[in-house]
Image (cartoon, rainbow, N blue to C red; front, top):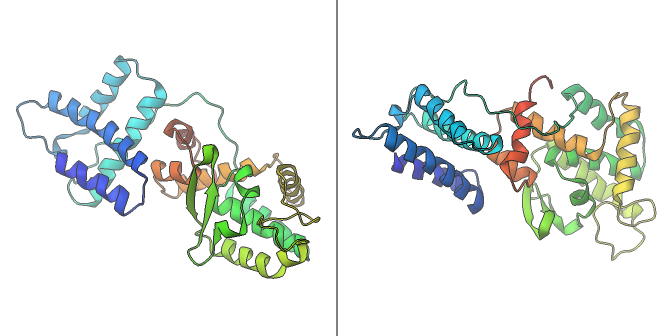
Amino acid sequence: MEQYLNHFLDSLAADKGYSDNTVAAYLNDLTQLVEFLNDRLAGSELEPVRCTAPIVVEYVADMQHRQYASATIARKIAAIKSFFHYLRAQGVVTTDPTVGLEIPRIEKRLPQALTQPEVERLLAAPGQSIGPKALRDKAILELLYATGLRVTELVTLEIGDLDLDKSQVICRGKNGKHRNIPVQSETALAALKDYLLRSRPGLAKDSEQTALFLNHRGEKLTRQGLWLIIKAYAEAAGIAIEVTPHTLRHSFARHLLGSGTEIRQLQELLGHANLSTTLIYEQTKEGLT
């Protein structure tokens, strides 16, 4: 089992670019599973194929008996699911013992998100106007939905944080932590290029201004200004619910999970310190098409 676990951890770092902290979290959670299997299957060779669905259920029940917090159990189940998904893809096992295994509900306020048609209407709304502000707003909305940036992260972006050649932005997250976020939307990349070429030069009043997104005075866009921009376009798009910058972040997260993105990868993209924060999206990814 150990060799398969090591190969899996290597793939997280090499193929998916996960951070050392994330890989270490996987190692910790899966090592506990291996220890349980060693006790449960004592006297027999420990191979992944011997970890059956009933044994996984027994392992989860054991954690519940030990009164582990729901968030902890949810995190460990997510790690096990990722591990066996990898083993299945590699042909090591033919049956995934975690299929149908539900992640415990975490008692937190569930985030509200837009449906895909609502997102499309919102992103199209700036196209009803012309001029530098419309191009700026198109770039802002596209970037928010393509990356899941927080409000503060977006308004503090500087021109140097945007790398269009590598299709990524350098995000200045909480506690001084930076992370590189891919911009995989061609529409978002095109909107950003259009903004930089045709909009920002007209908005800038000072050639030394380094903020990426500027207001009509040529100053860095504020949180309040961003909120008002999104509110106006949501109303123009005929969206009934209240739409804030965080709504687009939630929509980004839930739609990614719905398309098959792994929970740990989403955690890194969102910059969540704790996986339990990300796991709430597992409970709400349905019904958003």
